[in-house]
Length: 280
Image (tube, rainbow, N blue to C red):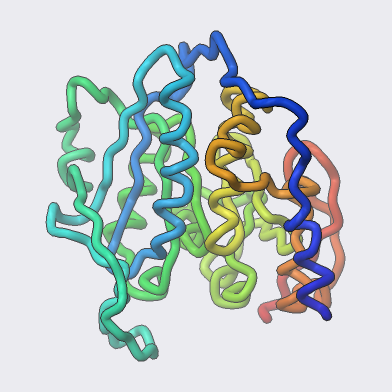
């Protein structure tokens, strides 16, 4: 009963009275053109492919092409299968997929950029089991790149990489609710908001667990191009946009995060009730 009551609103799709038409005259002038997705062994597949599908669906509506880079430590294929590590107490199978990086952290930091793609505008950081392991290179890359990009977007426990890089200090942020106790411990100076599907903190956006990255990306598309473009993309992908906005987070209740002390914080220009992390 608990899950049916919480998730029932997600099943309600808006009725379509007429065939949808693609928005016209959508300009990408002054908007981000070069997106870069960080990957590492043990990344969460949906954290990567969900947001990329939403972003990639804009290309036919824009008057300039979008570019994508896949960033990793090396150019070797990167698997979603978590790697064995002394810092991770997990039993791993071999079920997963691989993605091919297009460039490395070192090349980007050395200023070796693709002339066609230009500078990276938006850096996306996924989560996954690997974020509990050695993320030294990823953390240093985010720390160095943050002043050079227009936006940083994190999905799920990818927020822990941002937190350890120090770029979330003093900011509002959210992360995976199931992993809340561990994830929030990585950023003691971060204003962690447990009752948030995603948080817009200016040039840094963070989202809750796994599928929330898709919802964050739709909100980001609306931020850049307007609601009409985001809604049309949602229809094309046959994915209902998250109801109730960023502060509608039923999973905080599922994982009993509402049982900690109450405070007030801002999710995206609006006051919402949230909780202070007490080290759960």
